[in-house]
Image (cartoon, rainbow, N blue to C red; front, side, top):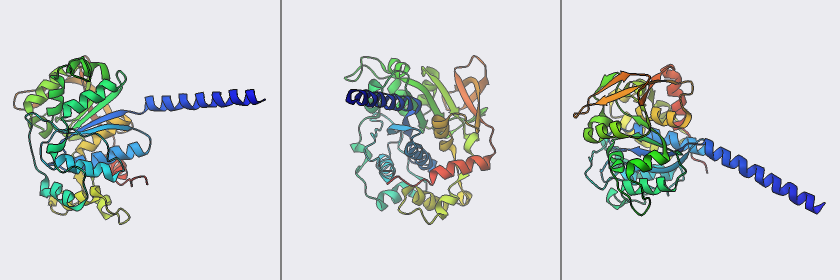
Length: 330
């Protein structure tokens, strides 16, 4: 009888372990690369991602910054800490990169309003090193990279050489470990969008040389999906850097009085949930010139994918803002 109970116990442990392994395989493992500076929709995107993690729908491996502004990484760390994840690895570009401040100085506001462990961007590890370490330790084809900022870090990662983490060059390491790259970038069918034009050399190189599928959520997808108004009115949300940032900027910029465009949130939403009921996909090739202008060539043989909004904007905005209003697990 004792032996039988022991065998049943072992069987239950094996079943639970198998279920845990299956769940882990189903949950996207995400590295988020953000400029976390000029616009503040990055903040909403980070909030959405943390909500997904709290719901067991994603896992954050790292939040990486493409902006060399001295407060970008510390303020990103503040938001991570708000969601009780202060130890998420953060990296910044140590080579040449743009440093751009925030609208209405929201970086300064949140830096002065909340305790922070990181004093300055200068104290943060190199983004490429963080990338290579995480990728080298990952299962093959398991990582989803989401970029909602400049392509600077991805440019340097592609060109990286073998190191203590991996004997592979950057492009080969990406091809082995990454399943897809999701970008908030471009404007379709043609445009001159910020995330591409700020570092147009890097953008052009990455888009032409990235070895996995690239999915683009263009500016036209999230432009009219306005979020933030319900968030800043909710009196039950207190001591929230997300709410404070949205309130700080929305109350100062007239065009955002009733909500901010959800550009970056759409990319994170797709990375976690796929098309769901909100998007459909179209294959093609995104062509970028030296100055950052882009054009889209529709083709069933194309190596790129762009998202097309099929949901009404009110339903999508409500869905996104519900997740932005998520309160951290205690």
